[in-house]
Each structure stands twice: as C-alpha cells, then as structure tokens.
Length: 336
Image (tube, rainbow, N blue to C red; front, side, top):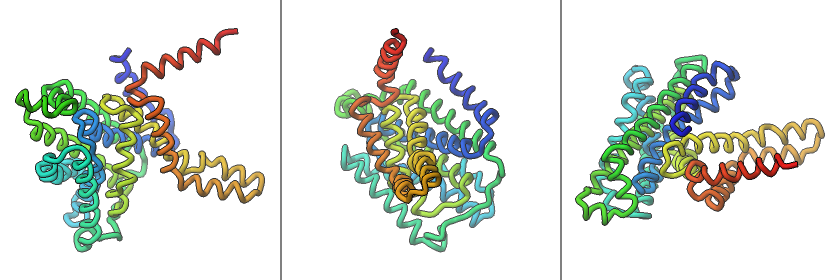
C-alpha cells in the first residue's frame, strides 16, 4: 500500500485541474505544490540533518529576485530563473554554511535569522538594482493557471524524488548520523561540516527554484514579500512540523494542511461571518470576520500546539496512531 501511495497521489494530482476547473482552487493547489518544494528543502536540512534553519526566506527571495532581475536588467525571460534561481540561492548558502556550520544548535538557528535580515535590507536599500520597496513587476506568461499548476507539480515531484534518492544514498546515512550524534559521526570519520554543507545547498537549491516559480506566477515581488520571516521561513517550519519532520511525505501533508488553514482564516472561515452579517445585518459578524481574516498566525499557533501535544512526530510520522484511532472510532460508530 505504501508503494502504491505515491503513484496514486501523482495520478490524482495530474487529473485535478482537468476535473476541478475553478481557478480559485487551482490557485490554492499551485501554492500547495510550491510549499511542498520549500518544505522538502527545509525537511532535508532540519528534519534529516538536524540543523534547524530559519533561512528559507533568504533562499526563496534570492530565487525570486534572480527571476525578476534577469527580466528587468537583461530583458531575458523570467523563466530562466527556474534554472538560475536555485544556483543563486546556493551561492548564498555556500559561504554562509562554510562559516556558520561551525556553530551548533540555537547559535546556527540565530545565524540563519540574521541571514534573512541581511538579504532583506540589501534588497530594500540597493534601489538601483532591486527597485527597493517599489518592487519588481512582470507580465505573467500565461492567462490560465493550468501551465503554472503542472510546472509546480513537476517541481514538487522532482523535489520529493530528489530527497528520497538522496536519503537512500550514502549521503543520507551521513545526514542521519550527524542528526543523531554529530560527535559520534565524526569519530567514525564522517566530515560533518562537509555533509551539512551538502544538505544545506540541496535545500537552498529547492527553495530557490520555488522562489523563481513564485516570481513568474505572482508577477510581483518586493523585499517584504519574499524575504518575510513569518510568511516564508516560519511557514516552511510549520509545514515540516505539522506534516512530520524527517518523513518523505511530511511536507506534502503539511503543505495541504497549512495552506488550507491559512485560507480558512484569510477568508473569515470561508466567508461564513460575512454571509451571516449580510443576512442578519448585524455588524458584529462583520467585525469578527475582519479580525479572523488577520488572525491566521493565531490559527497556525493553535494548530502547532495541538500537533505537538497529540502527534509529536507530525501527521505522517504518527500516521499509525492516527489510523488506529480512526479505525476504533469507525468501529464504535458501526455498533448498533
């Protein structure tokens, strides 16, 4: 059954936009698939290698700005960013990792926070190149969301496959040994600094191409959008934690859940309170809907607390526990 799951899921995702033609749901699925790519990268460096990172916004923003800048300054198609964005993200990750992987635990995590802020300030101040807070705008290539969906799907499948094959290789065993006990790994002759660098650069590449896709899909970026600690780095961590840290399909499940929760709050419980306000003409419903639409961070926090308390290994990591509870619940409901 586990071997059939990836194949069945891929078929369902391929057929999804052909069955569901509503552009709003296709848009949400493009975002889900983009977060699968970002979450897979974070899961490699943090989940499998044990190096907690808040630096995804730096790599995501670098990929996005690579696409935007080659269009603005060189007149090239922004789609070249899919090829170049990942490598430009690695160009940031390599010197950063070389210096900062000598730090451990919370010190490395704090260094990644600093990297985000450095990149954001550079993009804000360097106006002749980046346009600063004005941002960069491009004309979307496609009117339909269908091409973006299949490009995002291809990237998501590629990222999951890459992580799967990497973790089945010698590198994967090195990553896990570093996560479990770095000193013991080094005593066995594993160069922990080198292999943490390898893990970080693969993660940066995946996050960078996701940023390039975002630029092409949304058509606009500025420093506060693509270098956002909350909307990018924290979201990537939540995707990993909710889905299951150190699991291959954790980022897939986490991306679905987190995008759904974000949209649930953004739309005020899918427009429920706006609808109640319109039919009852009671202002309090409009006020509640307004504050709920700005309270997705609270929803994220509550979800993470619930997951940590009930499913400390994430939905995929504790799927055996979840399936047993669902089975017991179904058996109780079926009894007369």
